[in-house]
Image 1: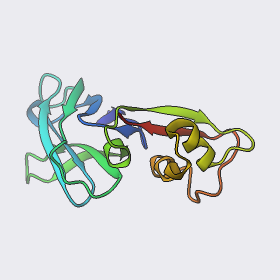
Image 2 (image 1 turned 90 degrees about the vertical axis):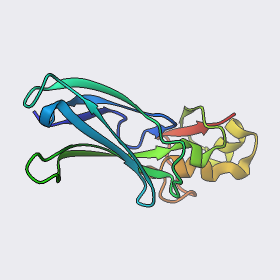
Image 3 (image 1 turned 135 degrees about the horizontal axis):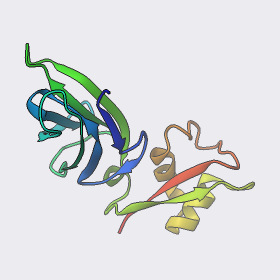
Length: 163
C-alpha cells in the first residue's frame, strides 16, 4: 500500500494550519510533509506506524502562516526520505487553494450551486455584498472556472469567506 493523503482533497480551500491526514509508512516510521507554491515552502516531519514496513494513520497540523506564498495554488506533499541516498521517495502530492491569499481573514468557504441566470458577479453580490469581488470566486475554483464569463447550471462553486 503506497502512502496516501486523504485530507485535503485536490483543490480544497485550506487555511493555516493546513490539516494533513492519511495513511503511510516510512523508514524508521518517519514521513515528511511540505507545503509550497514554488516560491516559498514550509516543511516538517512526523512518525507513523510502528516502524519500517508498517502502515499507520497520520494527522498533522502544518503551520504555514509565516510563509511568503505568492500564489493561490499550493501543493501539499507527503514523502519518505530514502535510507540509501536521502532522496524523496513514495511522494504523494495534492494541489490545494490557499484561502488567506484570496480573502482577508479567511475562515472557511460556502458552497454555491449555480442556477440558470447566475453570473460570478451576481454570486459575489450575494455572498460579499460587492459584485466586483467575483474574481475571489474564480480564483477559488480554477479547475471549474477557466473563463469568469462562463459558468454552468449545476456547477458547485466554493465561495471563500473571511472576517
